[in-house]
Length: 259
Ligand SMILES: NC(=O)CCC(=O)C(=O)O
Image 1 (spheres, rainbow, N blue to C red):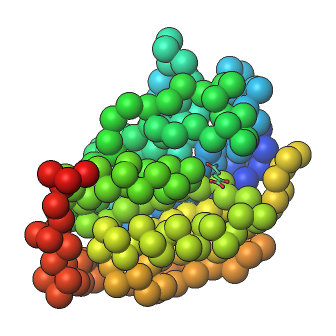
Image 2 (tube, rainbow, N blue to C red):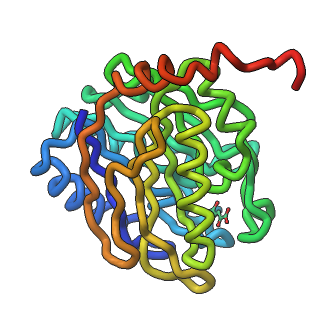
């Protein structure tokens, strides 16, 4: 299965331009025979949080229609990062996943809002896990700050996920945390981690790049650079999850009655 992460430089507060960029990046990813394309967090708006009422997506409808067309045109699965989804209950930081026919196959709204970046002032937290299937392989999504909460990452894994998608806008000053946390989440859950970060800067942050694909043994399969927008491609073997889980059977050896 060929994965292509789009590590993009998100233009702050400009969904139209970001959609144009994504169209071009998807064309590029398809030249590398992508089966699954993955985008970063809040890629339509960036962290223009105080303007989300104006530039957020009403019930995620615009992005669903945009992504449906892209997925159908290229017959590719797309884990469409996350976008600001405006609803009557509030604005959510929501991931959508699409299959090759452009059907929505997964939806997840970020559970842990990062107060350090003021998310709680503008966003409403999700409440549900983000499990879905890509080509019959059980997968799940969590979003950026969520990776600091291993008990939350474990939840969709216990439901069977073998691949974890992590759209992010992770700042450079905590790059070491990004890499260590993602490797740890891969090792402890014996799953693939496919983590899409962005590059560039906004008013408050410079983003770290270093999008990563990590295998269930914790080895880095592919890693992007720190500053350049790019497509990070790699082929993954979902059977490796089963073989690592057989080799060290942590899911049989767990003793959840004690914790
Ligand atoms: N967008 C985010 O959730 C950033 C998370 C982060 O910077 C951190 O956990 O540190």
